[in-house]
Length: 498
Image (tube, rainbow, N blue to C red):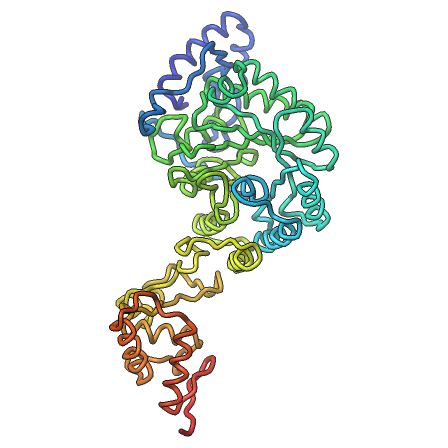
């Protein structure tokens, strides 16, 4: 068995000795179980008990506040362990709302409908979580629940307090997220508790949740700065005991709140994503289907870390539309749709054209424009300006397009027309704009293309610095078409009498 943190290894062994001296029976009677993967009997090597330290462990060696955080390595490797079934969950209406003006109830319901359509008949977008604090929050959640969709299931998010829990019971929800901060930064410095006090408080609220028949989803905030074997694993062990006692699923959401997680093989916990997932799954005994990863993008790693979580034993990845979320944002939902397809070789029923519909809805109805170079949804994500690239697109669009973006996103590749487009760029723009294919497609040697190129060159020779707009191009094309005695319609070029 691999114990991931080399500094924790000695401490775990010391705890083991202490534990055997105080309860020999518990240690000697550790269960022997069959490993379904290698078909060998195995026994847990260590007993993970709470390390109730007197002073907070803030891993100052890795997180010196007045320096850039460090990524140390110990080259302890864990195996790939991707579950058979993996899926996506959504926090657009919870974490996604913390960084922008609140959505209206109508907007939330519209977006929720589209998430249902995007997730497809197999429910690949499994859940969507909501705040419950204001009347408008609750109204939106009720409206979405009234839709009667199996997926995404409407769930909530609360703090670990009895008062917040009353809101969940009043709503009649089957599952709620509960904030259970797990790093000493939060336990000692924010909550002003010890680890024991925090653990007992969290377990009390979670037990109340289970008593009411509600499934708790435990949001382990700031897990990438937490003591994994001194607090996280012992806490998860206790949660799994409650799961067995009540016969109700208890989920673990590993929250990379500050985006410190890394996907590098051999990196040290608590920064190692695979190390965290391994510890929760293997050492704490949490089944893959009850583990969820929640990433932030502070260090540009939200997508890769989420994919890594899938690869090493986490079934669920939490996301928000277009990555909208606190500070630098969350893992973009649309990104994980295409990560899933690449890993599994199938979309499993997801309707990816809805992604484009959502981007258009955000721009037209909500007033939010996705940055132009954002993958899959930005205005320019499959637009080329270089003439040499446009020439490649004109010959075969596979040369400079990531996949059939027209098929999957209703977004064919486009060439922007500027001073660098060349004849090929103009020809490709016209073919796409007018849907000219096969024998109707224009080549870069077509007379109309040559004339439009001369006009474009004249514009930039006169001092223009901006890209040609679609409206400008259409007006000039209509003018030149009349001069040449042709008319360009959708799908064809026809000759007309001059």
